[in-house]
Length: 70
Image 1: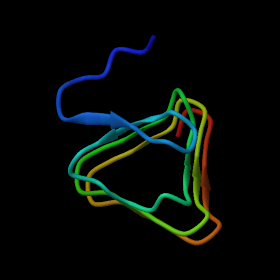
Image 2 (image 1 turned 90 degrees about the horizontal axis):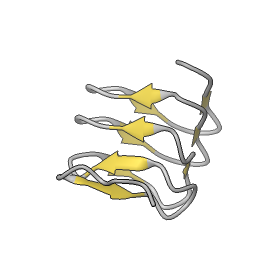
Image 3 (image 1 turned 180 degrees about the vertical axis):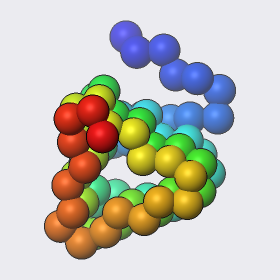
Image 4 (image 1 turned 90 degrees about the vertical axis):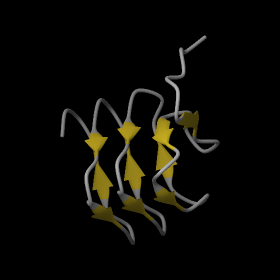
């Protein structure tokens, strides 16, 4: 089972780590090895997968895909 750092939760669509400060839609996919943190916003049908990390004030929306080691 994946260790969940304090202040994070597992996103129900994909199982990736999401910091509690993030604005995120239930419709997005956050892969099991991906992480979203900071004041990031992820919405729409966006995908974050692989070892990708979205952080800071980044905004990922629509049908955007962030993947690999991005």
